[in-house]
Amino acid sequence: MRNIFLVIRREYLVRVKKKSFLIMTLLGPLLFVAFYAAVIWIAIGSVDTKTVQVLDESGLFKNEFKDNETLKFTYLDSSLDSAKSAFKGSAANALVYIPKDVIKEPKSVRIYAAKNVSMDLKSEIEKVIEKEIEDIKLGEAGITHKILEDSRVNVSSKTISLSEEGEKTSSSGAATVIGGICAFLIYMSVFIYGTQVMRGITEEKTSRIVEVIISSVKPFHLMLGKIIGVALVGLTQFVLWILLTTALTSATSAILSNRMAEQSPEVAQEMQKMQKGMPASGMPGSNVENPVAEVLGAISSLNIPLILGCFLFYYLGGYLLYSALFGAVGAAVDNDADTQQFMLPITLPIIFSFVFAQFVLRDPDGTLAFWTSIIPFTSPIIMMVRIPFGVPAWEIALSMVLLVLGFMGTTWLAARIYRVGILMYGKKVSYRELAKWIFYK
Image (cartoon, rainbow, N blue to C red):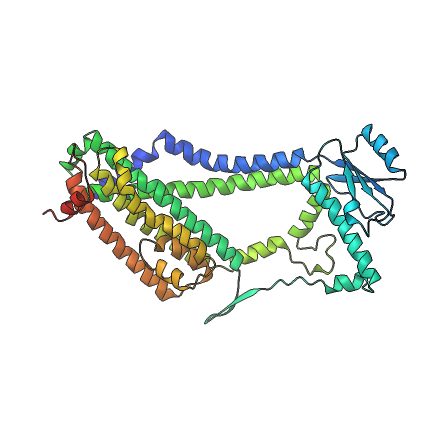
C-alpha cells in the first residue's frame, strides 16, 4: 500500500504543479464567463433605437404601433409619393405603408427602406397588422375583444411526487437540466482524464523511465497509483472550476445588471420588482409567478445531497473503470499513433451512453433506461440522467455494486496486460497477442 500511495502522490503533484494545469484551471472559468459576458455586453451595447415611419391610409392602426427600447414609430399624414420622397432625406430606418383596402388585401402592405430591413423588424410590423385585422374580423362576426381575451387560456401545471414521505413538489425541467449536466461532465471527464493516464504510461514506456520504476514497484501498484492520482487531479480541477465559475458569474452578473439598468431603466425596474416577488407591469393580479422564485423552487425540489453523492460515486466509478482500460492500452503500445486501433472498443460504450442519454431523458423509467443504468459500461452516464427524476433505492444500489465489480474486473484485466506490455518494445501488438498476455502466468 505504501508504494501505491507514493505513486499517487507523485502522479498528483507532478500534474498539479504543471504550468498547463494551473493556467487551464484559472483560465478555463475565466474564458467561459468572459465569452458569454462579452456576447451579452456587445448585444446590449449594439442595440440602437430605430425610427420607423408609418403611413396608414386605412386609419385602423393609429397608436397600434408601440414604442419600445429598440423601435420608435412616427405617424405620417401625406400621400405615398410625398412620404417616399421625404423618407430619402430623413434619418428614419424604414417606412411602413398600409393601404385603405388592407383588410381585403393583407399582402398589400409595403415596407420601404434604404436597404433590407431585419427579420425582427419585419416580423414585429406584421404581427401588429395581423392582430388588428384579426380583431376587426372577429368584431364583425360578433366576437368582442374581451371575449377573445377571456377565451385565451395559459395552462401551467405543477408536478407533485407522491412518496412514503408525503407529497413533494417536483420539477421535470430542473431534473432534465441537472441530469444532462451531470452526464455531460462524466462523459467529458472519462475522455479527458482517461487519455491522460494512457498518454502518461506511453510516455514513460517510450522514455524507458518505467524500467527503473518497475524495479522497486510492482506493475499493478504502479498502474493503480497512476489511475487514482489522475482521478484526484480531475477532482481538484472540477472543484476549483466550480468555485471560480461561481465567483466570476456572480461578479459578472452584477456588472451586466448595472449595464442593463443604464441601457434600459424600464427593464431594470421590472427585474427589481420580480426579485422582490412583486408582479411585473402589464401582469395584473399576480397570477404570473416570480420566475426567480420558480427557478429556486425547482432546484430545491430536487434531492441535491443524493445527486451530489451519486455524481461523486459515478464520476469516480466511471473514470476508474475506463481509465484502467486506457492504462492497459498505453502499456501495450509504443507510441500514440498505435493507440488508435485499441481506442475504438473502449470509446464506443462511452459514446453510446451519451447517445442513449437523449432517449432516457424522454423516458427515465423505460426498459432502455433501466438496463443501460445497470450495465457498468453505461451506468455512470445513464444513472446520473435518471437520478434527478427519482430512482428506486434498490436500482441505485444494484447499479453501484455492479459498477464496483466492473471496475474490479477491468482493473484485473488491465493489470494482466499491463504487467507484460509495460516492458514490451518494438513489437506490433494485436488483439490476439493481448489475449495471450491475459493468461500468461
